Length: 451
Image (cartoon, rainbow, N blue to C red; front, side, top):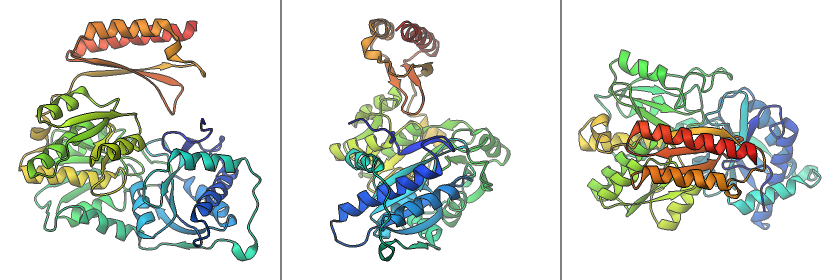
């Protein structure tokens, strides 16, 4: 069955426009409560954890979710502003039946969304999301007064999560002597990431730590690192770390302010694990992962497989392969031997552990993995269009692949969040890649217009 509301990572959109409205979110809370309660099969009262990022609309949706859940007879624990992976952690540590995050991740403040974790701290399976959507079609009926859920706030959630993050590196691990610039995107890590790094001994220079409800991701964070790059250079930092609004992604800057993306960070972690003998047989990436990562890992004897774009698909393929490391070029990295989901702070500590172990700079480690030039162009895609039914698109792809030969690849991927198809071309020569990608994008656009 096709899902009506759930995308690749929960439900997301513009605040005030369906489905991101208070009435829908209230009904969503009720529907979730009904589904989660049924799964207990009379084994006790259902309880759910709720966290959020720093958007002004988070308070409104927190109240709506809370009302819907308690109307379904569910007890609720409110964490307040906390990173998405912290909600996953607290869901497990509090023995909750599910966790809910109110966040639109790296999007601007006027967007928001709802995403979910199972009792195990993992993303919900498709069948649970479909069950919630089916429940949304039913009339909301409040449980009797004596069954209404209770609500409480967890006052020490940030402290618990800080201690957890520090526990993911070996005892005695120290960042003493490192000057690190940290950008928290005015988001959910603002009161946590600087403390984790400084308590491990680093000298921390922080930006993006004064959220006002409207400035999340605005000119800061992993989607806009110019301010962080300037800080790295001006303050003579050893490196920079940028988180996104909800803290599940991380990107780095080297000491010159040059970006180190998720593919490069995966390589650094993988090589550290290979050196210390803790490596699995391979690493999971996505369809968008740079060909340079695949080539470099295979040269070291590691396998590399690609999942569909989306951290839930990366995690699923990791479980199938029995591997513990995977991620996306966007900086969503999963170290499943450490935690259950993508965690920006934990991932950054894994990178720093690799740097300390190797005794080398970030740039030195990253330069061991040559990146293939990659160009991506978004092409408007009408609703209902199907690329596989357009012969002109297939012919254009074939022509592009002939031009690239064996040293490149082509990918057409309809976006899960926008009405576009992402046209990506990768190869060894940057100018050739750009030209091929532009030609392919033009051909795809023409084919869609004529369909």
